[in-house]
Image (cartoon, rainbow, N blue to C red; front, side, top):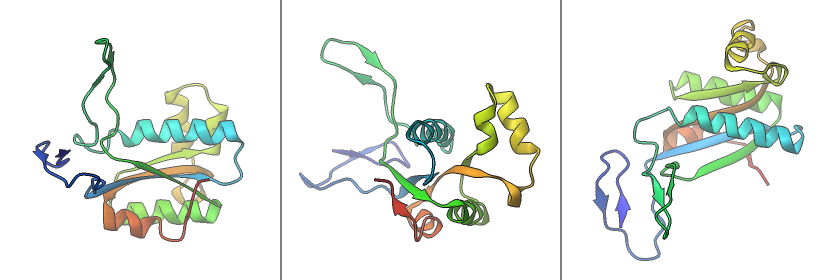
Amino acid sequence: MSTDISTGTAGETPAGTPERFPTKIAIVVREDLAGWQKLNVTAFLASGIAHADDAIMGKRYEDGSGNDYLALFREPVLCFTADPAGLARTRARALSRELPTALYTADMFTTGNDDDNRAVVRAVPADALDLVGVAVHGPRKQVDKVIKGLKLHG
């Protein structure tokens, strides 16, 4: 049984066939970041892209003992790495296609709260942003065009 993310209705998929979603989530982090920075940036970008669409989140989880857990994305998140030029290209492609986009800049590592994060982004023209991460969500084919040429993280 699968869930149609556009309607929230259940549908049948053949046993053993992975569900294919009409949309895609991609997170891109700068390849030269320290491990902790990559994890931090990925977490922040995922929290932003979670607001891209009302249908992006699944339902809450419950374990066999009845404990309740928060909902997760309904679809896989693909993580990529890029150099600064690749990040800038990814951001520009996503915005030109009007896809929901989240960003993280190097200046955000120096702040300690959301207000200051927004201020350091607002202070820099788009083409001069020192990007360390970008996330995008949208129709699968459009996201594929945005991330074309990037390497999967790993």
